Image 1 (spheres, rainbow, N blue to C red):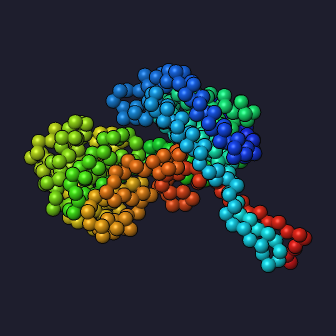
Image 2: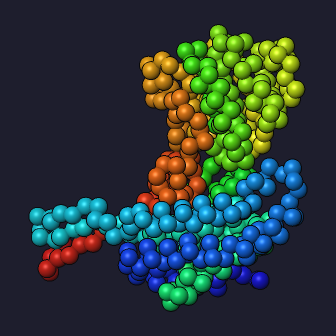
Image 3: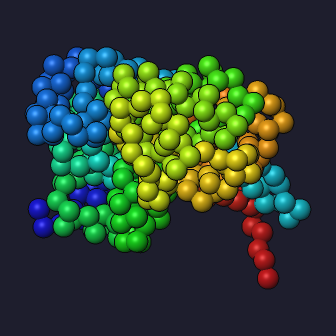
Length: 416
Protein backbone atom coordinates (compact mmCIF):
# COMPACT_ATOMS: atom_id res chain seq x y z
CA UNK A 1 0.00 0.00 0.00
CA UNK A 2 1.42 3.37 -1.04
CA UNK A 3 -0.67 5.49 1.34
CA UNK A 4 -2.98 5.00 4.33
CA UNK A 5 -4.60 8.42 3.95
CA UNK A 6 -7.63 6.97 2.08
CA UNK A 7 -8.15 4.54 4.99
CA UNK A 8 -7.89 7.34 7.53
CA UNK A 9 -10.33 9.47 5.54
CA UNK A 10 -12.86 6.63 5.65
CA UNK A 11 -12.35 6.28 9.40
CA UNK A 12 -12.89 10.02 9.77
CA UNK A 13 -16.17 9.76 7.83
CA UNK A 14 -17.28 6.71 9.83
CA UNK A 15 -16.84 8.61 13.10
CA UNK A 16 -20.09 10.47 12.46
CA UNK A 17 -22.01 7.17 12.32
CA UNK A 18 -20.59 6.11 15.68
CA UNK A 19 -21.28 9.54 17.16
CA UNK A 20 -24.94 9.24 16.11
CA UNK A 21 -25.53 6.02 18.05
CA UNK A 22 -27.66 6.23 21.16
CA UNK A 23 -26.42 5.06 24.54
CA UNK A 24 -28.57 1.94 24.29
CA UNK A 25 -27.29 1.15 20.80
CA UNK A 26 -23.65 1.47 21.86
CA UNK A 27 -24.26 -0.84 24.80
CA UNK A 28 -25.93 -3.44 22.58
CA UNK A 29 -23.12 -3.21 20.01
CA UNK A 30 -20.48 -3.94 22.64
CA UNK A 31 -22.43 -6.82 24.10
CA UNK A 32 -22.67 -8.33 20.61
CA UNK A 33 -18.90 -7.99 20.13
CA UNK A 34 -18.35 -9.77 23.46
CA UNK A 35 -20.59 -12.64 22.35
CA UNK A 36 -18.86 -12.91 18.98
CA UNK A 37 -15.43 -13.08 20.62
CA UNK A 38 -16.49 -16.23 22.43
CA UNK A 39 -18.35 -17.66 19.43
CA UNK A 40 -15.21 -17.26 17.31
CA UNK A 41 -12.82 -18.44 19.99
CA UNK A 42 -11.38 -21.33 17.97
CA UNK A 43 -10.54 -19.11 14.99
CA UNK A 44 -9.01 -16.39 17.15
CA UNK A 45 -6.83 -18.84 19.08
CA UNK A 46 -5.67 -20.55 15.89
CA UNK A 47 -4.61 -17.23 14.38
CA UNK A 48 -2.91 -16.23 17.63
CA UNK A 49 -0.94 -19.47 17.54
CA UNK A 50 0.44 -18.49 14.13
CA UNK A 51 1.85 -15.34 15.70
CA UNK A 52 3.15 -17.18 18.76
CA UNK A 53 5.06 -19.67 16.64
CA UNK A 54 7.12 -16.83 15.15
CA UNK A 55 8.30 -15.58 18.56
CA UNK A 56 11.10 -17.19 20.58
CA UNK A 57 10.01 -19.03 23.73
CA UNK A 58 12.36 -16.96 25.90
CA UNK A 59 11.16 -13.62 24.53
CA UNK A 60 9.59 -11.74 27.51
CA UNK A 61 7.06 -10.16 25.10
CA UNK A 62 5.57 -13.57 24.32
CA UNK A 63 3.36 -13.54 27.40
CA UNK A 64 1.77 -10.29 26.19
CA UNK A 65 1.17 -11.80 22.75
CA UNK A 66 -0.45 -15.04 23.84
CA UNK A 67 -4.20 -15.54 23.98
CA UNK A 68 -5.88 -18.56 25.50
CA UNK A 69 -9.39 -19.53 26.51
CA UNK A 70 -9.31 -17.78 29.90
CA UNK A 71 -7.88 -14.57 28.45
CA UNK A 72 -10.59 -14.47 25.79
CA UNK A 73 -13.26 -15.04 28.45
CA UNK A 74 -11.75 -12.22 30.49
CA UNK A 75 -11.59 -9.94 27.44
CA UNK A 76 -15.25 -10.62 26.63
CA UNK A 77 -16.16 -9.85 30.24
CA UNK A 78 -14.13 -6.64 30.09
CA UNK A 79 -16.11 -5.55 27.02
CA UNK A 80 -19.36 -6.22 28.88
CA UNK A 81 -18.10 -4.14 31.81
CA UNK A 82 -17.29 -1.26 29.47
CA UNK A 83 -20.79 -1.52 28.01
CA UNK A 84 -22.26 -1.20 31.52
CA UNK A 85 -20.32 1.98 32.31
CA UNK A 86 -22.01 5.38 31.90
CA UNK A 87 -21.57 6.93 28.46
CA UNK A 88 -19.22 9.90 28.97
CA UNK A 89 -20.37 11.69 25.81
CA UNK A 90 -23.34 14.03 26.04
CA UNK A 91 -22.85 14.78 29.74
CA UNK A 92 -23.66 18.40 30.61
CA UNK A 93 -20.56 19.76 32.35
CA UNK A 94 -21.80 23.31 32.92
CA UNK A 95 -25.00 25.25 32.27
CA UNK A 96 -25.84 28.91 32.86
CA UNK A 97 -27.65 31.91 31.40
CA UNK A 98 -25.54 35.03 30.83
CA UNK A 99 -26.80 38.51 31.84
CA UNK A 100 -27.45 39.23 28.16
CA UNK A 101 -29.85 36.28 27.96
CA UNK A 102 -27.62 33.84 26.03
CA UNK A 103 -27.99 30.33 27.42
CA UNK A 104 -24.67 28.49 27.71
CA UNK A 105 -23.99 24.80 28.04
CA UNK A 106 -20.69 22.94 28.06
CA UNK A 107 -21.08 19.27 27.10
CA UNK A 108 -18.76 16.30 26.73
CA UNK A 109 -18.39 15.09 23.12
CA UNK A 110 -16.34 12.30 21.50
CA UNK A 111 -12.80 13.10 20.42
CA UNK A 112 -13.56 11.86 16.88
CA UNK A 113 -10.87 9.53 15.52
CA UNK A 114 -8.47 7.97 18.01
CA UNK A 115 -5.23 6.56 16.60
CA UNK A 116 -3.56 3.81 18.64
CA UNK A 117 -0.02 2.57 17.98
CA UNK A 118 0.87 -0.57 19.92
CA UNK A 119 3.09 -3.62 19.84
CA UNK A 120 2.59 -7.30 20.70
CA UNK A 121 -0.66 -6.98 22.67
CA UNK A 122 -3.71 -8.29 20.78
CA UNK A 123 -5.84 -7.63 23.86
CA UNK A 124 -5.39 -3.92 23.11
CA UNK A 125 -7.29 -4.42 19.85
CA UNK A 126 -10.43 -5.41 21.74
CA UNK A 127 -10.00 -3.14 24.76
CA UNK A 128 -9.38 0.01 22.73
CA UNK A 129 -12.10 -0.70 20.18
CA UNK A 130 -14.64 -1.24 22.94
CA UNK A 131 -13.64 1.94 24.77
CA UNK A 132 -13.72 4.04 21.61
CA UNK A 133 -17.08 2.75 20.39
CA UNK A 134 -18.64 3.13 23.86
CA UNK A 135 -17.56 6.78 23.99
CA UNK A 136 -18.73 7.51 20.43
CA UNK A 137 -15.33 7.50 18.71
CA UNK A 138 -13.93 5.78 15.64
CA UNK A 139 -10.49 4.20 15.98
CA UNK A 140 -7.47 3.59 13.74
CA UNK A 141 -5.45 0.64 15.07
CA UNK A 142 -1.80 0.28 14.17
CA UNK A 143 -0.65 -2.95 15.81
CA UNK A 144 2.71 -4.65 15.44
CA UNK A 145 3.61 -7.17 12.77
CA UNK A 146 4.28 -9.79 15.46
CA UNK A 147 0.52 -9.90 16.26
CA UNK A 148 -0.89 -9.40 12.75
CA UNK A 149 -2.82 -12.70 12.52
CA UNK A 150 -4.37 -12.18 15.95
CA UNK A 151 -5.36 -8.60 15.20
CA UNK A 152 -6.89 -9.48 11.84
CA UNK A 153 -9.04 -12.17 13.50
CA UNK A 154 -10.17 -9.85 16.27
CA UNK A 155 -11.01 -6.97 13.94
CA UNK A 156 -12.97 -9.38 11.72
CA UNK A 157 -15.15 -10.17 14.75
CA UNK A 158 -15.68 -6.46 15.44
CA UNK A 159 -16.55 -5.86 11.78
CA UNK A 160 -19.16 -8.61 11.92
CA UNK A 161 -20.89 -6.75 14.75
CA UNK A 162 -20.61 -3.41 12.93
CA UNK A 163 -22.16 -5.00 9.83
CA UNK A 164 -25.11 -6.20 11.88
CA UNK A 165 -25.67 -2.64 13.09
CA UNK A 166 -25.15 -1.11 9.63
CA UNK A 167 -22.16 0.89 10.86
CA UNK A 168 -19.28 1.37 8.40
CA UNK A 169 -16.45 -1.06 9.04
CA UNK A 170 -14.06 1.89 8.83
CA UNK A 171 -15.24 2.86 12.33
CA UNK A 172 -12.63 0.32 13.48
CA UNK A 173 -9.76 0.32 11.00
CA UNK A 174 -6.73 -1.96 11.27
CA UNK A 175 -3.86 -0.22 9.52
CA UNK A 176 -0.97 -1.96 7.73
CA UNK A 177 2.14 -2.64 9.81
CA UNK A 178 4.53 -1.23 7.18
CA UNK A 179 6.86 1.14 9.07
CA UNK A 180 7.19 3.32 5.99
CA UNK A 181 3.55 4.35 6.43
CA UNK A 182 3.87 5.33 10.09
CA UNK A 183 4.71 8.96 9.26
CA UNK A 184 1.37 9.42 7.50
CA UNK A 185 -0.53 8.37 10.61
CA UNK A 186 1.53 10.64 12.85
CA UNK A 187 0.89 13.66 10.64
CA UNK A 188 -2.71 13.01 9.52
CA UNK A 189 -4.08 16.07 11.31
CA UNK A 190 -7.03 16.30 8.91
CA UNK A 191 -8.35 12.84 9.77
CA UNK A 192 -6.98 11.82 13.19
CA UNK A 193 -7.77 13.79 16.35
CA UNK A 194 -5.39 12.17 18.81
CA UNK A 195 -2.68 9.49 18.81
CA UNK A 196 -1.90 7.27 21.79
CA UNK A 197 1.28 5.16 21.64
CA UNK A 198 1.35 2.07 23.83
CA UNK A 199 4.52 0.05 23.97
CA UNK A 200 8.25 0.38 24.49
CA UNK A 201 9.95 3.60 25.48
CA UNK A 202 11.56 3.67 22.03
CA UNK A 203 8.13 3.61 20.37
CA UNK A 204 6.79 6.33 22.65
CA UNK A 205 9.79 8.59 22.07
CA UNK A 206 9.52 8.08 18.29
CA UNK A 207 5.88 9.16 18.35
CA UNK A 208 6.64 12.18 20.53
CA UNK A 209 9.35 13.40 18.18
CA UNK A 210 7.53 12.82 14.90
CA UNK A 211 3.81 13.39 15.50
CA UNK A 212 2.01 16.56 14.54
CA UNK A 213 -1.28 15.00 15.65
CA UNK A 214 -1.74 15.66 19.40
CA UNK A 215 -0.51 12.71 21.48
CA UNK A 216 -1.12 11.24 24.90
CA UNK A 217 1.75 9.13 26.20
CA UNK A 218 1.13 5.83 27.91
CA UNK A 219 4.63 5.66 29.28
CA UNK A 220 7.01 2.90 30.16
CA UNK A 221 6.82 1.77 33.76
CA UNK A 222 9.94 1.98 35.92
CA UNK A 223 8.31 0.98 39.20
CA UNK A 224 9.89 0.99 42.66
CA UNK A 225 8.85 -0.61 45.94
CA UNK A 226 10.43 0.97 49.02
CA UNK A 227 10.63 -1.22 52.13
CA UNK A 228 10.83 1.17 55.09
CA UNK A 229 12.44 0.21 58.39
CA UNK A 230 8.97 0.14 60.01
CA UNK A 231 7.61 -2.35 57.46
CA UNK A 232 5.88 -5.59 58.34
CA UNK A 233 8.52 -7.77 56.66
CA UNK A 234 6.20 -10.68 55.90
CA UNK A 235 3.82 -8.24 54.23
CA UNK A 236 6.73 -6.64 52.38
CA UNK A 237 7.97 -10.02 51.16
CA UNK A 238 4.57 -10.95 49.73
CA UNK A 239 4.14 -7.56 48.02
CA UNK A 240 7.63 -7.44 46.49
CA UNK A 241 7.40 -11.01 45.15
CA UNK A 242 3.94 -10.41 43.70
CA UNK A 243 4.96 -7.14 42.06
CA UNK A 244 7.94 -8.82 40.40
CA UNK A 245 6.82 -12.29 39.36
CA UNK A 246 3.04 -12.27 38.86
CA UNK A 247 3.40 -10.92 35.32
CA UNK A 248 6.82 -9.35 34.71
CA UNK A 249 6.19 -8.43 31.08
CA UNK A 250 3.71 -5.65 31.90
CA UNK A 251 4.38 -2.01 32.72
CA UNK A 252 3.15 -2.13 36.33
CA UNK A 253 5.59 -4.84 37.40
CA UNK A 254 8.37 -4.12 39.88
CA UNK A 255 11.76 -3.02 38.57
CA UNK A 256 13.66 -1.82 41.65
CA UNK A 257 13.49 -2.72 45.34
CA UNK A 258 14.64 0.00 47.74
CA UNK A 259 15.25 -1.14 51.31
CA UNK A 260 16.36 0.73 54.41
CA UNK A 261 19.88 -0.16 55.55
CA UNK A 262 18.60 -0.86 59.07
CA UNK A 263 16.57 -3.89 57.91
CA UNK A 264 18.45 -4.94 54.74
CA UNK A 265 20.27 -7.92 56.27
CA UNK A 266 17.04 -9.22 57.76
CA UNK A 267 14.71 -8.56 54.84
CA UNK A 268 16.63 -9.29 51.64
CA UNK A 269 17.27 -13.01 52.37
CA UNK A 270 13.51 -13.39 52.85
CA UNK A 271 13.07 -12.92 49.10
CA UNK A 272 15.48 -15.68 48.14
CA UNK A 273 13.20 -18.73 48.04
CA UNK A 274 10.54 -17.10 45.87
CA UNK A 275 13.03 -15.37 43.60
CA UNK A 276 14.88 -18.67 43.10
CA UNK A 277 11.59 -20.44 42.34
CA UNK A 278 10.79 -17.90 39.63
CA UNK A 279 14.41 -17.67 38.46
CA UNK A 280 14.64 -13.94 39.06
CA UNK A 281 17.98 -12.37 38.25
CA UNK A 282 18.95 -9.72 40.81
CA UNK A 283 21.27 -6.81 40.10
CA UNK A 284 22.36 -5.59 43.52
CA UNK A 285 24.16 -2.43 44.57
CA UNK A 286 27.43 -2.52 46.52
CA UNK A 287 25.62 -2.81 49.86
CA UNK A 288 23.01 -5.38 48.90
CA UNK A 289 25.42 -7.58 46.91
CA UNK A 290 27.46 -9.00 49.84
CA UNK A 291 24.27 -9.59 51.85
CA UNK A 292 22.77 -11.62 49.02
CA UNK A 293 26.05 -13.34 48.16
CA UNK A 294 26.41 -14.50 51.77
CA UNK A 295 22.87 -15.88 51.65
CA UNK A 296 23.81 -17.94 48.57
CA UNK A 297 21.63 -16.33 45.90
CA UNK A 298 21.87 -18.21 42.59
CA UNK A 299 21.20 -15.41 40.09
CA UNK A 300 23.12 -12.47 41.45
CA UNK A 301 25.00 -9.74 39.62
CA UNK A 302 26.57 -6.46 40.65
CA UNK A 303 24.33 -3.63 39.53
CA UNK A 304 25.63 -1.04 37.10
CA UNK A 305 24.43 2.55 36.99
CA UNK A 306 22.20 1.80 33.98
CA UNK A 307 20.37 -0.94 35.93
CA UNK A 308 18.53 1.74 37.88
CA UNK A 309 15.83 3.56 35.93
CA UNK A 310 15.52 0.50 33.69
CA UNK A 311 12.25 -1.20 32.78
CA UNK A 312 13.13 -4.89 32.73
CA UNK A 313 9.85 -6.49 31.51
CA UNK A 314 11.43 -9.79 32.50
CA UNK A 315 12.34 -11.88 35.55
CA UNK A 316 14.97 -9.34 36.57
CA UNK A 317 15.10 -6.55 39.12
CA UNK A 318 17.60 -4.23 40.75
CA UNK A 319 18.03 -3.77 44.50
CA UNK A 320 19.41 -0.72 46.27
CA UNK A 321 19.97 -0.15 49.97
CA UNK A 322 19.10 3.39 51.13
CA UNK A 323 19.63 5.22 54.40
CA UNK A 324 16.13 6.51 54.98
CA UNK A 325 12.92 7.88 53.47
CA UNK A 326 14.63 10.96 52.05
CA UNK A 327 17.21 8.83 50.24
CA UNK A 328 14.48 6.60 48.82
CA UNK A 329 12.52 9.60 47.62
CA UNK A 330 15.61 11.07 45.97
CA UNK A 331 16.32 7.80 44.15
CA UNK A 332 12.73 7.65 42.92
CA UNK A 333 12.86 11.29 41.85
CA UNK A 334 15.96 10.57 39.79
CA UNK A 335 14.98 7.25 38.20
CA UNK A 336 11.18 6.95 38.21
CA UNK A 337 9.17 7.07 35.00
CA UNK A 338 6.29 8.44 37.14
CA UNK A 339 4.15 5.39 36.55
CA UNK A 340 3.59 3.51 39.85
CA UNK A 341 5.53 3.70 43.12
CA UNK A 342 4.98 1.90 46.44
CA UNK A 343 6.04 2.10 50.07
CA UNK A 344 5.75 -0.69 52.64
CA UNK A 345 5.59 0.64 56.19
CA UNK A 346 3.46 0.38 59.31
CA UNK A 347 4.23 4.03 60.10
CA UNK A 348 1.19 5.94 58.83
CA UNK A 349 2.98 9.29 58.95
CA UNK A 350 5.84 7.98 56.80
CA UNK A 351 3.37 6.51 54.32
CA UNK A 352 1.60 9.85 54.10
CA UNK A 353 4.89 11.65 53.45
CA UNK A 354 5.70 9.19 50.67
CA UNK A 355 2.26 9.63 49.10
CA UNK A 356 2.52 13.41 49.18
CA UNK A 357 6.12 13.70 47.96
CA UNK A 358 6.29 11.09 45.18
CA UNK A 359 5.44 12.43 41.74
CA UNK A 360 3.79 9.50 39.95
CA UNK A 361 0.49 8.63 38.30
CA UNK A 362 -0.29 6.07 41.04
CA UNK A 363 1.26 5.88 44.51
CA UNK A 364 0.69 2.89 46.81
CA UNK A 365 1.07 2.31 50.53
CA UNK A 366 1.30 -1.36 51.53
CA UNK A 367 0.07 -2.79 48.22
CA UNK A 368 1.53 -4.15 44.99
CA UNK A 369 2.06 -1.90 41.99
CA UNK A 370 0.42 -4.62 39.90
CA UNK A 371 -2.98 -3.07 40.63
CA UNK A 372 -2.34 -0.14 38.28
CA UNK A 373 -4.84 -1.22 35.67
CA UNK A 374 -8.09 0.14 34.31
CA UNK A 375 -9.99 -3.04 35.05
CA UNK A 376 -8.69 -3.24 38.62
CA UNK A 377 -9.64 0.40 39.19
CA UNK A 378 -13.22 -0.23 38.08
CA UNK A 379 -12.81 1.49 34.71
CA UNK A 380 -13.75 -1.60 32.69
CA UNK A 381 -10.62 -1.50 30.55
CA UNK A 382 -7.89 0.95 29.66
CA UNK A 383 -6.10 2.37 26.66
CA UNK A 384 -2.92 2.50 28.72
CA UNK A 385 -1.32 4.11 31.75
CA UNK A 386 -0.66 7.77 31.10
CA UNK A 387 2.47 9.15 32.77
CA UNK A 388 1.94 12.71 31.60
CA UNK A 389 -0.13 15.38 33.31
CA UNK A 390 -2.33 16.96 30.64
CA UNK A 391 -5.81 15.59 29.93
CA UNK A 392 -5.25 12.15 31.44
CA UNK A 393 -2.99 10.59 34.06
CA UNK A 394 -2.84 7.02 35.34
CA UNK A 395 -5.21 4.40 33.86
CA UNK A 396 -6.51 6.14 30.75
CA UNK A 397 -9.98 4.83 30.05
CA UNK A 398 -13.51 5.63 28.96
CA UNK A 399 -14.10 8.92 30.74
CA UNK A 400 -11.02 10.50 29.11
CA UNK A 401 -12.03 9.68 25.51
CA UNK A 402 -14.11 12.84 25.27
CA UNK A 403 -13.47 16.53 24.85
CA UNK A 404 -15.72 19.56 25.40
CA UNK A 405 -18.09 21.59 23.27
CA UNK A 406 -19.69 24.91 24.21
CA UNK A 407 -23.24 25.55 23.01
CA UNK A 408 -24.60 29.11 23.10
CA UNK A 409 -28.30 29.74 22.33
CA UNK A 410 -29.48 33.32 21.97
CA UNK A 411 -32.40 35.35 20.65
CA UNK A 412 -30.80 37.94 18.42
CA UNK A 413 -28.04 39.16 20.78
CA UNK A 414 -25.09 40.94 19.16
CA UNK A 415 -21.84 42.32 20.55
CA UNK A 416 -20.23 45.58 19.38
